[in-house]
Structure formats: C-alpha cells, structure tokens
Length: 200
Image (cartoon, rainbow, N blue to C red; front, side, top):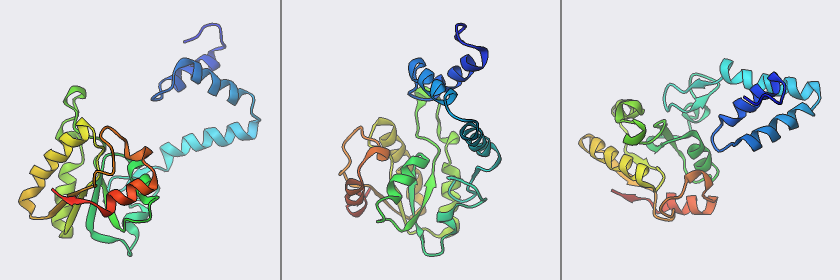
C-alpha cells in the first residue's frame, strides 16, 4: 500500500500490481489514466469487470470461458466433433481460431503439468478429456501445447494416458520454435503447424 496516495488510489494500484507482468510503476500509470477519465467511462469499466463475475461461465464441454453453459464453438454444428485440439489456456484457442484453418473442437486443460508449482494431473481437465473421447468416439486428438519443458512433459503424459483409447494422437508441427508461446505465434506459423501436424 502506498501511503503517499489516497487510500482508494493506493488500493487500486495494489490490485493492478497483482496482475501478471504488471509492476508498481505500470500499475500507477493505469490508475492515473483511469482517474483522468469521465464518469461514464469509469462506470463502463467497472461494469465490465463486474460482468466477469456475473456472466462468465465455464463451458460444460470444453472448459473454455463462455457466457453460456456451452461455448459458441461447441455449439457450432459445422465443427468436426470427432477431432479435439487440446490446449492449455483460452488464449491458445483464440490464437488457433485466427488461422481459420482448424474446423474441429477444443479441450482446455486449464494449465500444464508443473510439479514445482504443484500442478499435478488431478488439477487439470484430463479426466474430463478421457470421458469426452469415449463419449464422442473421437478419431483424432491434437496436442497443441507450448513447446517448452512443461508443455512437452504434459504432451508425453497425455500420450501415455490416451494410448489405451486407440485414438490417433498428433501434435502441432515444429513450425513453432522451442520455448515459444502459441498466443504470440503469427497466423502463418500456426497455420503451417496445424497443416503439418504429426502423429506421435
């Protein structure tokens, strides 16, 4: 808490500082930008944040965020429900959708395996994935996890776990450099990675 600011400003700086990648200086810039805005802007800003609590749900099928019980992708009858692309985060789905190349559906794990941060298989949506594959009689599972240590570890775990289900398991092609994030990859790279996916 910064005592040389008013309590409300100090509290908001503290909240912004809690965001990933945001330091105290950037948090201060955000707060003083907001202080300069008119009442209508601030009311809209606060209402949008409130909507996160009231309107955002978890899709009952793929576990992505949605404003309905099932997301627009899972609801889309034109999507190929027999092909599931497994991702770690919502940002990965958004990045892959921008390519307009993929016409299957998704399954969001909610993270990747990371023993150092106590992220174990039971804390990810892996059991739900297994149940979904059996129920939907899936033909292909695409592992679209970041090519870093945690992503590779999770991919290997999933491969071992999924093998008894006799489903085709592929991964994105190596158009993605080691250590990169799907979220920041350009659309051409992601398109090539989707087209060049390989069975593992």
